[in-house]
Image (cartoon, rainbow, N blue to C red; front, side, top):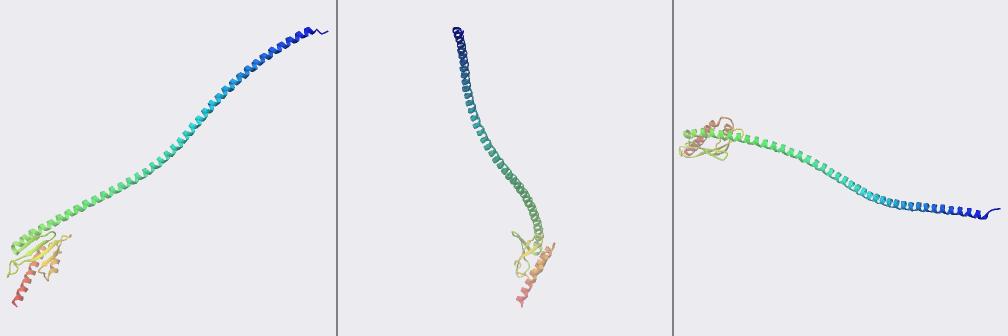
Amino acid sequence: MIDTDELQQELDKTQAAFKKWAAGTTRVANDCKASFLRGVRTASADVESLNERYYKLERQAAEVQQYMSRDVAERDALRSMSESLGGEKAALQRRLWQLRAELEAETAGAQAAEQELQRERSTQDNRLGALDKVLRLYASVLGLELVPGDEELNLIFRLIDPRDPARAFKFAVRVLEDNTYEVTSCEPRLDCLDELSGLLRQENRFADFVKAARRGFAALVKRETEGQGA
């Protein structure tokens, strides 16, 4: 025969033990759930913080990339400008050297021309000085007067015409680049003027020219006198 009281007691013990286990399990489950929720919240906060940091870093990276792109473009532009300016500088330097060389050549040419001009002037001065000395000598003997002009000498003969010893017979000559002479005027004009000019174009024949000129004027006076006598 089953003892229902004892069975009831055993059932009550089992039920009490189950409730105790259930209550403990519920506490553990609630603790686990609360811990999980705390973990979820913490993780969510961490994820949000990480997202904020990610977006911030992404923005910073974009700004850095933009700055780098702009900086590269600026560097390229500056490099291109620098190369262009370098080319212009080199071209200007070459032009400066060319102009300096041309200036030095022109200066040397001008100095050479000036020296040549000085030599020419010195030569002409010497020739005119010699002429002056010779003509002064002739003046005392032949009645010859020298009158210097800007670029020529005027030779005035007197003591040729017995009718008028003061009558002037004139020649004008100038010194050429080859140190010979050229007749520029003759008063009165002589028929032998070409012959006299030929004498002037020969070196060291000026004295012969003076003598031939005086003879020409004397012959002219003789013809004039003979004409009057006829």
